[in-house]
Image (spheres, rainbow over the protein chains, first blue to last red):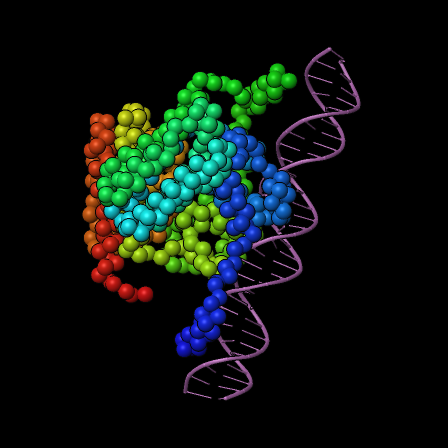
Length: 242
Length: 242
DNA sequence: TCAAAGCAAGTGTGATCACATATCAAAAAT
DNA sequence: ATTTTTGATATGTGATCACACTTGCTTTGA
């Protein structure tokens, strides 16, 4: 029986075929909504409807409602008593709460990663840094989508190295929750004259290269604290404008 | 318009009617599965089927499949490539991973709670401690379900006081993931002659009463580490027996 | 003129059906 | 006797429908 299976596998391997995968529609909807949320494509407090999203994504309601349910349990979306769902509004208490949790968990993750990243992984994140420099040199602005994606790749490439199957999903949940806030902060940055984001990332990489866990943690804290602090100020000054 | 609403409210309040609530079937299924998972009613590696659960819970498949999807995103259940779902198996790496995350996050939560719990909340958890003593004095054993519930109430009564809407759902997810493991540990305890669990809880309460965050954190770490260490030893000695 | 009732469109929830795939045991072939 | 094939059963996924509830606007009545 095992011999037969091995033979069949050889047929496949000989032909150099890659596994085709079986992603469901629900998975695609879920991924798409995640991407939109982390990228801040939805406004805080925006209400989402099942049929509206199903139309926009060109599917039926079924995959959408299940994806929404999953996002609600991750606190990426919020179920109102009306049974409608919206992206959670930004409050001062919430951004402080989110930042504290991110410092705690992402700090621990990068601290673990510091002693586990080989030259191979260091090189990968350095590559991402260079890519960042390139797109910044070329275009002057407005490629914030690309920047958000690159930032995400940079951080998660590091977190993945921490080797914890428990912490990583939690960090993903935290990013999902801070996504809508962060986008607001990014816009605030670009209209306030941007500070050099890459600088923070470079000091993170420097700390990782020398396996200095404490320095890496501190550099990371500085990196993620900045947009939150910015957003906090902005929120306090505008007071109530909705 | 507001006046009219107020009048209607007065009618209701006069009659002393409580809001009736609108819990959906899906919510009930979800809660029930959560309870079962945290209580360790499912075996690690056990496969769950939608139709099987729907029959057991006397509903249709629809609420069950959505509840399962939510539990999968919380890592309380695991989606196999077959598209079937099972409760995650126990491995040494996983219990170490879970324990580390729980120490990190629950430690932070209790540390925050230490400075926020008033005499009111302290009294509540002391009440839970007394309740524990009572059921231990009466029955000699085998009320492990009651004990599990009481343990859960004790911890979450404290965590709720930390005031973080971000950390608490994460802790719930961690309990969901460690539930199946813990039950194994509890059985191991009862056959190995039980150590006094209440002792650890009492030192937690003592630390909280004096608002000593560091002591509370240490006592908590000792409390939650114990079953994991026990389970770890058991797993290593039995080596492979499945 | 304004509040209350009524009506209509929109929305979430749960049930049921159709279909593709997985699983497993029995039968057939080597 | 072992392996392959085959067929029956079980299971997850997505579509569609019926129903209840919400919401906002229009109409009615004072």
